[in-house]
Length: 193
Image 1 (tube, one colour):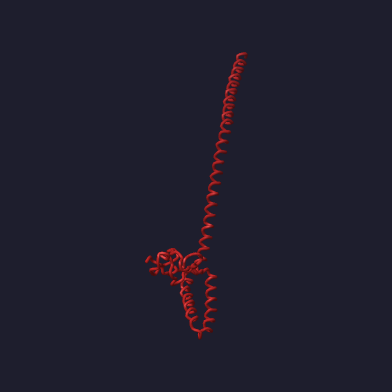
Image 2: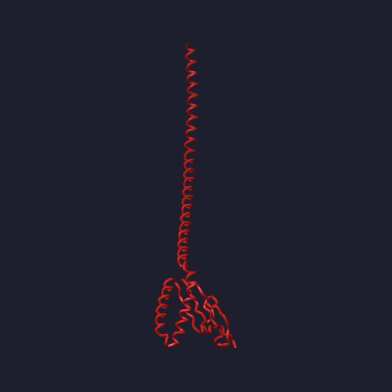
């Protein structure tokens, strides 16, 4: 019986030893898991921070693109509105010139004074309507320097050294429509004698 007891005790000791080994292995696994969990958490936090930074960057880029698009379309709309009447105004400028010529010829004849007054009223009203749409007459005087951005030289006449390269006479007025040239002024320039 003693033998059996000894065998049972030995068996218990072996089982205890096995249990201790298992407990030690389990403890080592838990410790290694605990050590790896903070590393995994740090890796995950870093990954999430990178994703948040990337999302912020995408948002800022998208917002900037939208703002640029909004500004560009607003500018295009303003330009379109400003130049919508361009063709009509370009076609009406010669009519304005005809009015000016008619008024000039009526000034010479005294019998046409009443007709001149009526024509003058119509001319002023017509001119104001065109000015309200953005038409503006170029201010060109004799003696101004020739500028090919605004003037079109139709001929040159000898005018001496002091008038060389300058406007000698304005044949046809030039006009702006919203600060863009609609028609160049036709001028006569001076040439060296």
